[in-house]
Length: 227
Image (cartoon, rainbow, N blue to C red; front, top):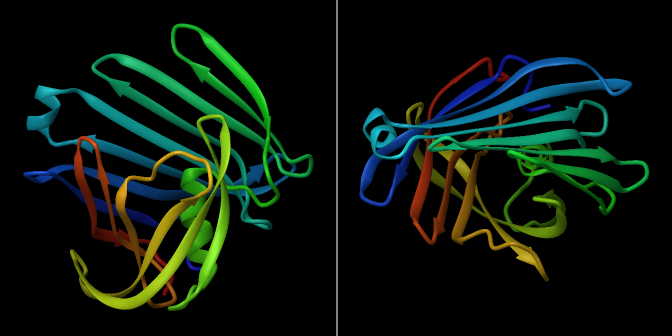
């Protein structure tokens, strides 16, 4: 396994003309008993710089319970606070029955049940599942994802090893390009993920072009990693 409980990754986020617009921390906080099995509890938090926070107050937190045996999510959630507008979206998976229960909580609560394909991931668990696959240049795989109450498929094209400058130095990393297959949400133009080409398979860089600008996350620091 390329990750373990205690791993914490810190990223600098650039956005459009802002060299540093914020930071993100993604951590495997613990491995614990969960839903009759054991799971990694993984949390990702995003915060803007103090300057941008004054202009527009935002905070995002995503978490997932990733079953340690199947590497499939048991439950995932996304919390957002945008200038006081708070929203919690939660998905609970029944992997055996290929169903999911979706709940959106704002000032009201809206729920829905929908079918999901076998081996479905949520957006955060997918990143760790990709790390565990041991991908190599030239490979193409398709991964089902459930997000915002819907299921779709993402194709991952693994490119060549490239050198990526990070806070840990220059790292050899595989460039992975995700694209939605068939109907599904847009991932944004120019979406890419770079995973270190070593036993850790660290996500050292993530970039995506969205309607509001280009976002780039670059790894600044890492603690508790394998090896």
